[in-house]
Image (cartoon, rainbow, N blue to C red; front, side, top):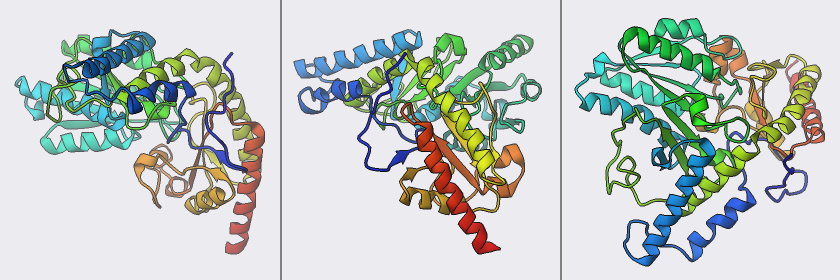
Length: 405
């Protein structure tokens, strides 16, 4: 059983409920990174002793990630985060196929309309080049329709892209069933259909063993699993080839140029090892609190609706509700002043007002999509914390409703 650790220094009355956006560093991660800021600052591309030391540290971090995710280290590429990893996987594959002689118009990419902006915007860009983009239907909880997936694939399909766990509504997609369909359709069309999985939200709460997931590309954002911001990991299968999407000195096996972020890479190795070593016990703690809180919120806040599924197929720390008719952007600001850090949608979807495209897609209800609140709890979040949040939210909603009557 893992120890419930206080990763960060809480100020009085502050309750942090936005773990999907940012997480505190594991203490071990900070300890591992510090020497590479202060003492071991060499450039890993240099041939002198300081450079060789930095290069050896990167190689060691790559080995750690490989062991934690059960993949050979040469298939591990360090990036600046989830957004770059998703771009590199999707655009890099398409450019590789294009350079091999395949026209853009002869390639199809299949995805859903509830993906993170780093996927949604990337496939929009590919469509502008002539790539055909198809969207798989999702149900009211956000699960992809497996029959729609099968019908969307063709002999031109080169890639299916989906999030392991959705960053807004927490739905965990059935990786094994998806992979089985892709394999069946590959055999039917006698072509390769690559499988890209955005696993940014997963490492703290789900197993990310590469072979078990069955992806050709697996993208992690270390900032979401108690590692440093600005660092990510892209895992690729042996059959997948990538063309760089920007150019320079040819670092990271020629796939991702630029002087390596040595402290970030060291932190990434430590964070992924710790996250994966204890994901199950961590998830059990969060899951128990999450289910109680969902029940409490739906009973306490009149008209509140849960977005996403209930039970095991929801990310263990994710709670997302809508309160139609309530300005939840204002509610989030008000809760912040009361000591609760919450969000309304993915931080990468942009600040300020606007609807959740994810909730709009699963509900077809603009009022519901404009009134979302997301609470993503941590291993040290207590039910008492969430009771206090619910009381504060109820007071705010009641006051707003009185003013509009």
